[in-house]
Length: 196
Image (cartoon, rainbow, N blue to C red):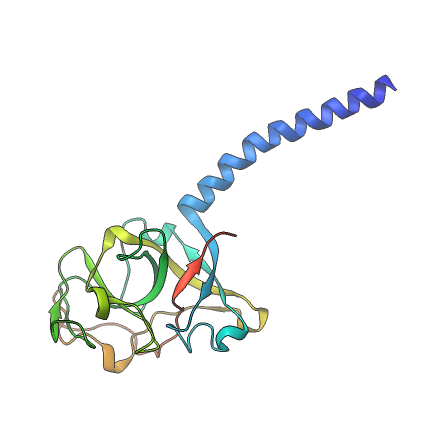
């Protein structure tokens, strides 16, 4: 009986010490490296959630890759919503700082993206709450870059950056020419649920 009690104490002690090591490591990984998030809504269709409300894509959000605010046109990124700081939205980067963009219904027909900002849009035009509503987004709101679709299994894939041909910047303010790949749109949706 005493031997059983000793085994129980050893088990509890090992569990408690493991818990106090595992929790900080897990928090650090989620805060600095990456985490998974469920994408909800229709704003990134057909790139994400192509079946609509029937199923939601789950994406890997890479936090490490945006630690220095280095993103490229066509990346799908998660940002803190400029209108609701409790919500994160996921959109495609259309233009970077210094680029000139023709807007889709914004108060100004043409916009030069200010330094330290991005122009983001959903792939499903007309069904997206994006820069055409609230304007350029500060790089400080950048939260992560969607690198892979990891659920459902039939949609496993790496997400490659691409900007639709009709949404490319009119003028690239940094190097006066575009050197990006000519891919087609492959992105996410309205917002992410990172409660998992």
